[in-house]
Image (cartoon, rainbow, N blue to C red):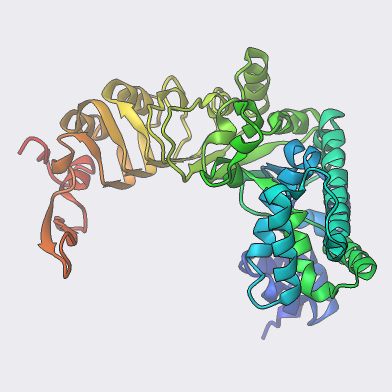
Length: 472
């Protein structure tokens, strides 16, 4: 009988590599079992590393990627799209209004110290922020404000130095180039806990010692006040940037340096095989990649790209530029996976048409608006067989879905799904009947399917039937 430890190291590494990557508890347990399994699984401890434009974050990032064991398992690099704001760094009153007051308001209900601080800062905003001397009892919160705002200013200066001097891009690119596995580069604007926990605890402990406050009670508030601003914060209607930034340019931080990462990685000898944007809105793409030189450089740096994802969740009221996505996909003959999930009005054919993707096998288009010629041009660039195509809420701006289904039928599919189509004759694509709900206005929609679990449109495209549901 062959025991697990009788297997060669190569097989042990493959077995450990089959553990779920989303939960490393099995890997941790495996490392504790014996020395051989520890050696076979240790490189899987850190599959994803986040890095942002702070010195502490860069140091942690390079330390991980230069580790002889852990670096072998790192495959995903996450770059949060958020920043420290010069408006908040320069204007103390703005820092109080948009950072301090919201942080205290969320946690002031059951603590009299926090309620006292919240009352003080609200009075500060009501007219005491002009240098007028305050009551003696308020000196504690003034000193607290000076300490935390001073730290915010330091983080802002650090960010700008790393950005303007090119240190962030060069350091990240050099470290990524040492990764032995294919690189996945993720940009997102989700809140990111990248502040170094150890250094933050030291900072809060020292500040609270000077102020006579309990560090455990105030650490979450300090953390929130010293976190960078996300894109979601910038586009929220209630954020109120117009109070101190009437120029619309103030609403978008100088984040163009993220454009340089793929090219810098390529120049350092690395490759980005998978790029993903997971955004709450499309604002970050509005001005990115608008220059001819930038587009050309970016296109040459992503020629080996195998997968691209653009998810933008929040609909806006204007048509936004997709030059960046267009530039990334300009020359990507090896692309095998494409997902565009765009919740905004406006047509997006520039991303899809006039492309040759002979290896593209997995396609998910959601919220995309196309004309029939755009769809035909897109299909012309695909191989004869596509493993998986999913169309969700695709709006056909010109032409009919009857013709669109005929065009889609010219390809062969392993799996094909069309959901909630929009445009002319769309009501025939997903045949449905309605039954009333329990409350007025409610309804439940059940799709009519043919044998095989397909809708009539899917069955027609898959050549299960010869009846075009839009013409029957």
